[in-house]
Image 1 (tube, helix red, strand yellow):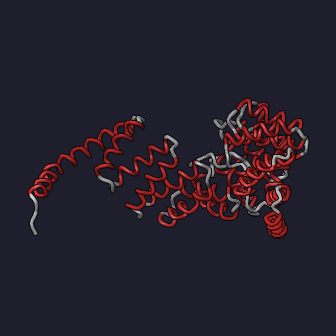
Image 2: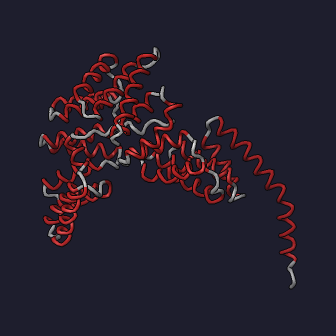
Image 3: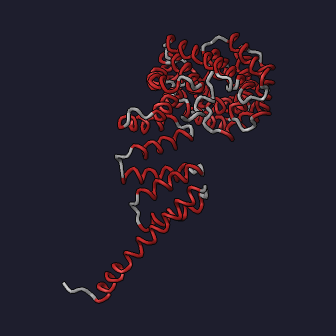
Length: 392
């Protein structure tokens, strides 16, 4: 077969350029690594993108880009780069750990579980993966799994108050009350022995631990001690608000959540709770405002969507009510309350067939599950929004 002169020339040019390509890659690595060390993320990104353009299967470039995008909170792009890296080197557990971390930092704990589990199959003694997997299990109400993941870390972390608090919650919710009590006793012991420990923060943790156990009076006593030492402690007034809400003392609960808003104006859970309280007091206009503010901060709050749906339905805005309840249903598909409200809205829209399907789902769910969303809205259960904020 004859080869054209142009083809021969092209091959020769590419061969001559190969050393230059490697030099370019090396130069970009040096510049990218230096920029990354100095926190110059945009500059580092440019260099690693150039490498990826020249060598599309360059593992290090894709991993570094994933790290850069994680630091910039560009979660979609981080996941794309890390998934590319995973295809190139599926045997490296650290890449899967970073993939799990992307989901974890977005509070998508369900999606984080599988990659964390795969990391631990390869490296069973990775403590950070165990700790974060335990928190993910806890956030998905897999309490026994959470306790099983966290308990082996006792030897190395039993002086860490955050770990002990999470273990108290996991063990107590799993019915492992011996482990729960051991962790709570140790949490109190650590606080008494550590002169440098923030006593207000410890009182808050202990108070939340008692609150999770349903011991509201003991919780209140600890939280009041915390307030005496540091009234501007983050989440302190939020937790006090939960106690008053559980007592149906809505006015005091409202004041506590507003105090926490003054300390932490960006915490969506405060607005979620304020919305549910205003809804209980038939203050619909304020409730709608608070729910919308909550969802601006975190669109994954099913109680806020549920509350908005109730408000729109009461105002006969049925199309808006349906949109809101469908968002709640996507986040809480096993809530009988959500399906019942959706059925009522469908009836009012004249969609009888779909409504009957929803009513059937309500009957099935009442037999299968306790409606935790309705309990959460009414304040009879407590879910700590801080549980997954610590990374070890």
